[in-house]
Image 1 (spheres, helix red, strand yellow):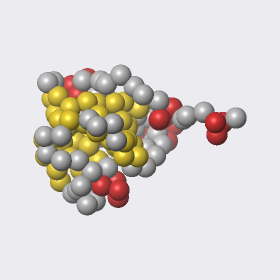
Image 2: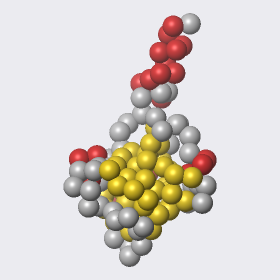
Image 3: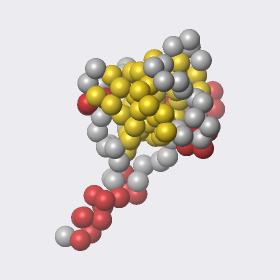
Image 4: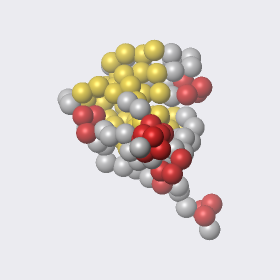
Length: 119
């Protein structure tokens, strides 16, 4: 039965404003315009800010998106950038990049867990 249902990562989400993103490893969607491209990373901007999107090995050619292209990106926000799992283009084409990385040990960011151990 598990294989007949979409995973949580495939579920459509209401886009979040870029300024509201938090390092909590939850799945988020942002919608905006591609401002810059750096190999397998690109910048998406909306009216509230800019976010660095990391596409992994699938995006190393730099050809997944184009400058000024409107896109929606779904993935996990962590350490200041979005690890993209899906890029949805304005024409409806969806690029599935890879499954997002799992959460850090014990469900907390590694730095937070280390700080607790040092106390």
